[in-house]
Length: 470
Ligand code: ADP
Ligand code: ZN
Image (cartoon, rainbow, N blue to C red; front, side, top):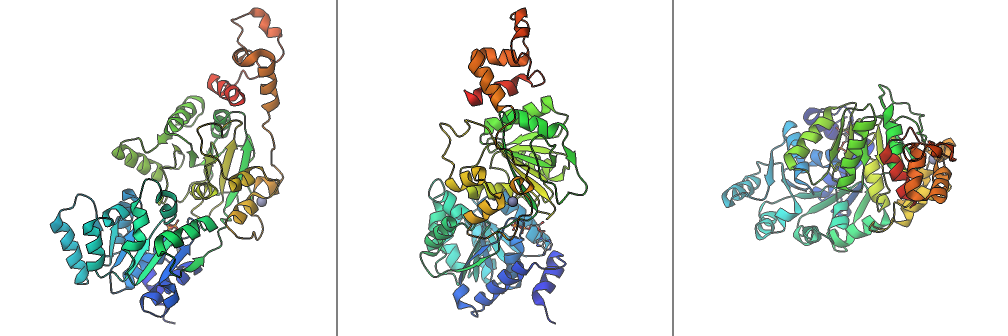
């Protein structure tokens, strides 16, 4: 049988077989470009992270006569994708800030003579008088917007160019948006902003990630639970498909700890270096100089036994496939963000853990409100996977692993009563000293109830726990 999609995938990208959704999406795009599937001229394709989105548009870009425009949200993503497509022998150019008129018009010219397969760009570069002209002049047959959830997440706040993509791309024959999150909110946002209410065809893969095991752990101190988890953390050559993480279990490496603030990434990284045996731990956030960030990304990409403490600045489009554990020190503000970040684990389709630590008082002032779907995931007395899938409008075909289904779910942190009692009895300041077993103050303290009850805990952890209840 003549299988030109697979032949192209094999010869260009070295892929041995195609996933069914890749066939469907790449095939639909090609048909739409040839005018065979009119209804799919405006297409939203939703594939879970690790589902192999890139190939879905790289194959058409490589096969089609006319060049393809690919829009990415981040420059680092553009650089990475450019490298990968060039390795596959595609002829690629990039519209970037700081290019001279001459450089840009050369790219436009090369497009017109049919000597380019794809042009990569950020929305900001396109949202300029040059960008507008170029989109018209290059003769693109297809435009692709990767990580399109950014349109709805960022468009209305600090990246207004995203809002203009719809009108910019209006005249192109085929426009396809790719995203990993298909909640009703994201989909309707995309329809409005990108396609200005034109009819849109959707291809939506089932959003479940069967390789992920979900656990939500109530804790008194995030620092303490991280120390417990990383003290005996290990690299497992063959991930156990039945393992569901419990409070107090050692984490599997490599791991990411998603923190809410830049300061927290550094605090957590310092604490883990000081109090666990893990040596390979680094902090990563958008406040670091970009060459430093690149160095850390490369270091983490190669490491097997590493822990990266990161803000959400890490990850989009980063293809480290063997991450075994993603820990959150706090719930992100939406379930879309949680699924996106937890989905960094297990991209190699081997079992991996998504662990959410929930400390009391952490959703207090100054934090964006957690959405109700996120709260259902955390607190409803039911399967975690079911809660996630429900938020994305899908049914669960059975749970591949979560603390609820495994019967290991905890409803309260083990030390929670103890710490509250200490605070009630001694007040927060003295409670910390009593719990630590601080004899220096008064020799007679040794007789107080609870004296030294947390003497194994580093100072910062006791403090953290007491503040959480304060
Ligand atoms: P996504 O963007 O959907 O998260 P990517 O396109 O980055 O996913 O692909 C995820 C990983 O899966 C990459 O390492 C990629 O090389 C691999 N991959 C993609 N398609 C296939 C396939 N058909 N067979 C084997 N591996 C694949
Ligand atoms: Zn379950």
